Image (cartoon, rainbow, N blue to C red; front, side, top):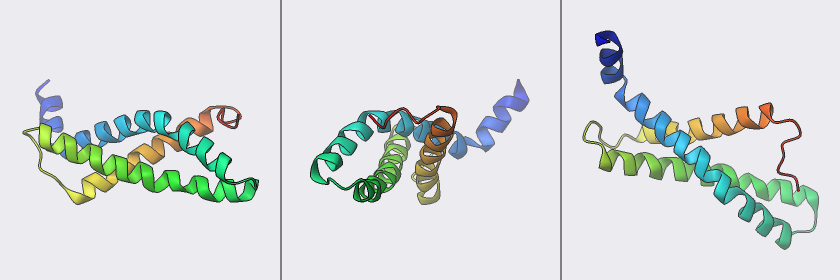
Length: 110
């Protein structure tokens, strides 16, 4: 048990950015569909819709950054760290990519 706690203490920033990235991943499910519907309503061309759907990547990174910032305010164990905040968004994007690969057909085209 001591080794596990020692590991957690030495990787506390890693644990926090993975947690904030996972929360961001879950929040993006609430944001993704309304954004895609809004883009579909504004553009008729499917290729332009795919290009505009790329806006979800910076939104995810920004939300991950903000989530890590909020966690750094709440947690007494860490301070705000720019690299960890950016990694939080990267974790959320990675989790989403793995989720999309595991789901057959994507599931969000309709």
